[in-house]
Length: 426
Image (cartoon, rainbow, N blue to C red; front, side):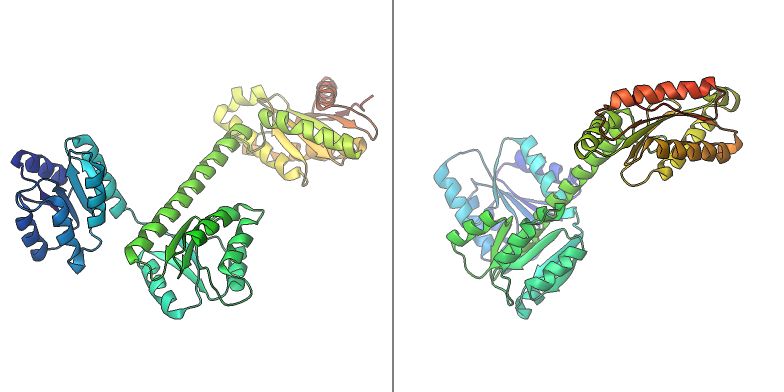
């Protein structure tokens, strides 16, 4: 990209020239506005950095001349100045200056240029739900969005758009406020924001032919994230769409990482089952619900027999594979609403909702036989399983049931291992 540098100081031009080169772009340095205008007519310029104080006309007047050229109506223009005069700032922005930068702050100027170039280079990808009943207006916006590498689903009425939104994930909704059909653009916004799922947080860009401050305020209150008026400027649409989609995707990424961290904290990484932390968090809820609605709940404590010998004989890699296979089998044995957790090296717990003690004992026998038949890594494997249960009308807590099932598991080991012991809760 060609970057035009306009400054009366040869030293400053040299510094800025080198800075732009280091960022991988082509600097063109001149000392006054007259030379700058000549350059603007001769070759395309992607960014102008101009000092306020220049020989002849100043940087603000140069910006006005730049904006008078059709090809430079939207070209970023950074005004470099050491003054903080508010009137001057007002005049600069009125002339079309994009940003005012402290002339003597080299680090901030470097950071600003880096951000600008990164923004220009970073592509945005995503899917846009677009609702517009004017085919002429829709054609312009769709072409613009597709030029940004965005996939666009276009609908003329909100009813069809909402049906698509229910079936498909989107990164942005763009909707005209006045639409054909029984649901207006405002109605669409309200319906999206009233959804119970995460989809209600999708960014919405409203489009209106009326630039009314009261209307804008009302739309923001309804849940619109941004607002543009017809006919929209292409660069404005690009900037607003890009910012909304990037913000949404960054939030999605943060939430995904948060979920991954939560799963790392709550799941056993070797077996994929819940861990002791999860058991402490979820088990009391199981038992409080069972007591409130008076249904049975049972607990199995499962300990793999002689597991230390497996590690010693076959090595820890094989031992880990054995644990993983056993955990996978236990997870598959769970019904919906049950919970399987690895709580120690070779110890597992199964919480069985709506399961009476005798039914839990039968399930434990099935699991015991399944573990014996598993033969993970060709290794003979058995387990001792202790069973306890909360009967109807009992106010047993998880800690009490766990203590009883753990005691039953040790009884199974005393009786020769590879078996089930059931101790009913007293």
